[in-house]
Length: 78
Length: 359
Image (cartoon, rainbow over all chains, first blue to last red; front, side, top):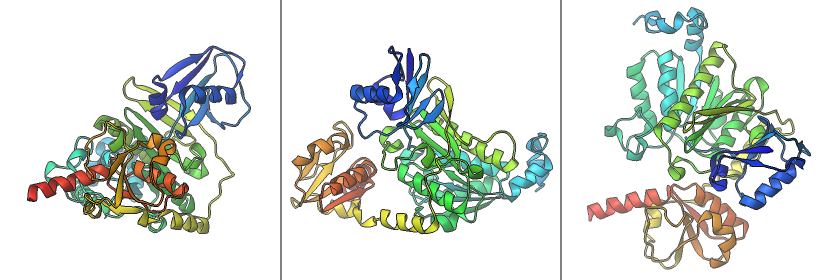
């Protein structure tokens, strides 16, 4: 189980702040691709963290069970 | 007035002492934005005895600001925020020197302004200006204390602290968009909490105590009190020097892309101009133009064929932020006569109300 957390405008789009993905052996890129297909983030930009650390979206990182992925968009209010 | 009795309760903290108080007195902090975040940060820095505080904002106070911008009085609606803030601080702590700067921060004034201060606080409400603040901090080698809000969530970080990572290392995509408070809605408490966390970072940097929130972003959710810190690293591939800065912000600031709400309203009954509302269908106030169309920003890319690329089109949204994004999208598709209405539907609605009162 991989946990995915959503923040800000991304969470508005997914309509939840947390979900679990049951597949274990999956690369970060593939996971992001699947989420993009599911939620159509389109112009929404966000940074991606794995286990509380921001990583490059293009990293070839293979996620392990119990990894926590977070999608962090920039906020603009003030 | 006796300075040490004013500050006694913090001077007796071992982390501060007389020497810490002296550091506060000698420090100069520039706050960009006198809105919700600025209104939280400013009084606490001033009360603590920060020697000199500059505050940059060219806005006037509106009634709808008062639920979160708590330093302003109802009687001050229509007055410049920075002037009111200065008057408020003069009563709170006359020992603090306040520089009220009623200007818009731009590529033209940012570097000169920043050079006069030790710490720059980002209390603004749009993404483009955060890149400008970040870049001007890089050029002038100043730390940037970042804070921002999306509804009930907030983010805080300190960029460019002792050569640490910057806003661009966290969010490299400069062309992204995010709704501000006018567009997304906000409660005063969330800007208050985030502003307070920013003020705390400023004080820690000045006093050199604790751990500065550098290379980390704090994300706070006031609905469930969850807060998390995420680490990020410096991206060394981005380099900016003074010339590149000048070049970049010379071209970006194309003010002629914007048009004033008052000028636009003269053409409200014209069929020569198409008024394009890029808000969502249910957003109020509605404005009745003879020749108007609604296509929300989200759908614009797909529904552009409804528009004629040679027609004069005035784009508007609630406050003028989404319309600028729409304008860029249209310009990329070779639309030639596009302007974004500054202040958006809110500005136009206010003018229309005034007009109907005077008639």
